[in-house]
Amino acid sequence: MSSGTATMAGMGMLESLLNDDAYHPPEPRSLEETGVSPVVIETLAVKYLLQVGSSSGRDVAKRLCLPFAILEDLLLALRSRQILEHKGQAQLGDYYYGLTDQGADRARAAMRACAYVGPVPVLLDDYILSVDAQTIRAEAAKKNQLEDAFSDISVEQEMLDMLGPAINSGAGLFLYGAPGNGKTTIAKRITKCFGQSIWIPRTITEDGQFIKYYDASFHEAVNAGESSILRTASHDARWIKITRPTVVVGGELTMDTLEIRHDPKTNVSEASLQMKSNCGCLLIDDFGRQRIEPTELLNRWIVPLENRHDFLTLATGKKIQVPFEQLIIFSTNLEPCDLADDAFLRRIPYKIEVGDPGVAEFRKLFEIFCHNFSCAYQPEAVDYLLQTHYRPNDRPMRRCQPRDLLNQIRNYCTYNDMPIQLRPEIIDRVVKSYFTAVAGE
Image (cartoon, rainbow, N blue to C red; front, side, top):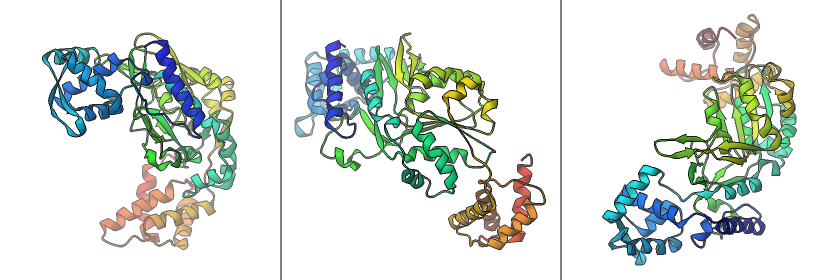
């Protein structure tokens, strides 16, 4: 790919940013505007036809996420070079294409070299430009936005007042405290404070490598037509509009997932977790319980947290600089000072303790979950629970317990073919089995 082609693609992106209030990847008007070599696009087309046997030109364009108008001449050129052949007439002046023997040989050789078949990739430089334009630090979460994001769960105002400045810092935070008090739930809600969709590439290319970026397990696609700004503008189908991501990783986290992972059999790579969380949040859940030492993970991120960019290595050995633009949240049952030294804690300036609920909040949680379980709320039954099973045993209240106990009450009542009821004798039964299971609390 020539520097002139890359510049043209970058200028198209920059023009879009300057002309629109929101980031919007414009639909390419020519193959040159994709920034990708026509040879790469040809190879993707023939590999797709090797998979499906034959396909209309419009279906090939759809698979490659390019406008048919700019792909049609390339398909006709492949036919004139006897790589493709017409299999029949399709609608609207289109044709069904198939591979010739020569084309099939070329496609099989291409598959052996790289098994990627899918959308034409986006240049790494264009991806970096998109992250700069959509960074979460460009938005400031206001008090009313925070309250809206947490409106359907029980969070005290004092907690919201601590979270707000921490979120706006963009520097990351620790949420720590006893298990069962909603640290993970709080962390997942934080991304909603920003309430904006972003555009991400389906696949990225750099140094001849294909890096799969869009991940349905982390990225929630939305309808581009929902935005009034975009209704009259065509977008580049190689990009997909998603809600701001919240990437959650727990005990399964390894150092390998923080790098670009390359499959030597397919010669296809996958973006790292922190790349997938760019412009959103990255939640390290149950921090300190991973299979890697906390200090090893923290040392890996000291420089990226300071400089807001990371260095990753491609399968070719080339190091690339990528944005590190997300809010990192460490959720842990341990004290932050037991997990990190002063140098790292300085880079995560907010440490917020999520303590146990008070009696009033505990009652409110029972009321909320009784409604969710279609169970009549009985204040005297909660009084009985506290007086009989909490205070005599000096048992701490946790925010998960009203939900968990009501779930067991529902199961008990369903088994006994009776309506869900919050009654002392039923509470006695479920408490025995529930707290026996977590006797170490």
